Image (cartoon, rainbow, N blue to C red):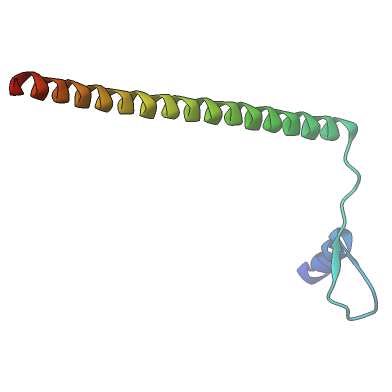
Length: 93
């Protein structure tokens, strides 16, 4: 079989010509998936959703920790400010 005929056979196997002769719009032609393939794809999609949810929970937890860290940094800075002001007041007497 010549390579050119092979190309034509593969072309007709994988693509279906839509519309009139000479139209450049093609549809991909696939056979229907098996039940097992559908099950695997659905389970993978569910796993992706679970991982996304887990990632969202982790990001929320990280945001909470960052908020607490900033709060305690502010509290520490304020406490040092209060200590310095009190020492200045005591030394001024």
